[in-house]
Image (cartoon, rainbow, N blue to C red; front, side, top):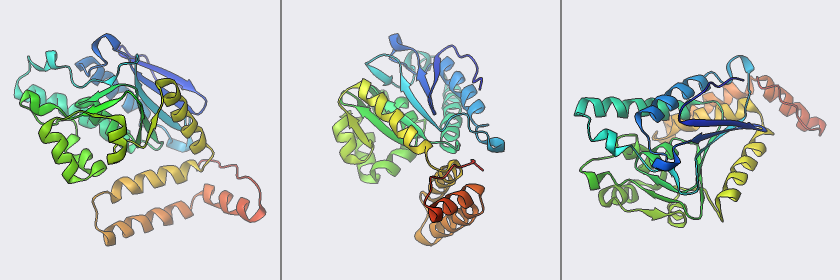
Length: 269
């Protein structure tokens, strides 16, 4: 599948995974306006994945170029020339990007290979889960600039680590290392180095690729919809997701293969 050409992004399909790399290493992969526009255009293309049972990839790995930074945050030099309305439009564009990542029918893994600060941390949190190299670090340091998170940090950080820890990290702007981020629940796994980080993320995509595509997509949608609901409402969403999954061809194949004690060959529909 042709995903298009982008000035600030590198795209590589490897096995069942699409590796998406923010490619501004000299600027620590900061989210300049061009990067935001490239991400917005690409996520628009990716949003068509799964239509008509078409699954060109089974997962996405999002990372940054080089060994120092995943995404160091917004481009403060560019932001310094913005008025409030322009800054809000810039943030709204990133809201679109993060919401599209969350709504993709395939899992997205953030492979955090260095700094994930401000907008970089917010971009990572829009992924299904985060893997990190041992040298990675995370922060929402906007208070140091007289600002607050603008790309979803106020919402997603408390969903990941709880409201108390989110308040502390946002109010102080404190930077935490990968091991602490894992302890808080922000990061799923920490790897010894960035090479094993990427290998681990790709291995997880390959593991997921052996499962039913429709089941993974349905599970992702249900989990996102359930976030923040009470138990009764959440069970209602889960029940509808279960009903929908049961009616798929993947479910027929999977259940039949289990009974026959054979490996399922999921059609993805």
